[in-house]
Length: 89
Image 1 (cartoon, one colour):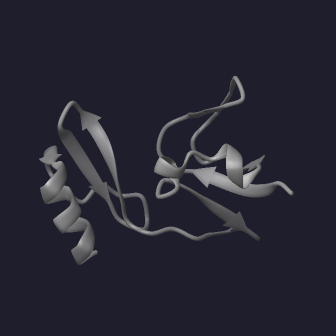
Image 2 (tube, rainbow, N blue to C red; image 1 turned 90 degrees about the vertical axis):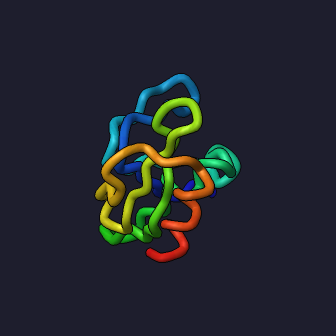
């Protein structure tokens, strides 16, 4: 059974179709990559269930976002530092 999902930062490609950021879409749980489950989240009755997450900036640099999708670090950070910051949110 398909569920509603949403991604708030950047477009997402699913089955060859580009889904714009912030647009709810239907997909099977198995179609959502396990590594993306922190940024592609369930969308239920207009309420988004989200938690803070990190996203690769470039190479070894990461950004950290809060539950509202706002970036909380000023510059890119190493993954270990990003993980420590995530634990505090």
